[in-house]
Image (cartoon, rainbow, N blue to C red; front, top):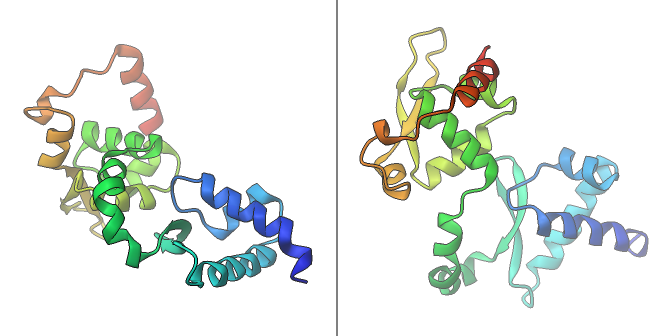
Length: 183
């Protein structure tokens, strides 16, 4: 079976390399066209391969997904050169989520999902890790969901004096924002 999975393993490895964010097994299966069981087996194989001493990378489980990252033992040596670049990078999905939070704060995950149409859990975790957003309270509805808002780090990154300095939405953007946000 090992020889039978060489191309499939290479395909999954290439997908993981190309993804800038963690990806779950279902998505790997859909993108690759391979069964979920085969994807699981390939991830085990890749994990074993990356566990070897001559590999500088590993599979990391992040927010319910998997991604290729430098081994922890090497990250300390690499952080000064590569960490700062990547810490400041904001993916398109992060930027969309951050925009919704900035313009609609305080806002819950469910409300963010209503605007973006996708589950915001991964993006919220990444934005929390980057300290661009924080929990700012609980909404007074059943379940008391957490509400999120932007931080001083957000203001620093975008060189804003206050949230009031955010660019005004054009009329078209404002209408689209309202329509997409209807729950």
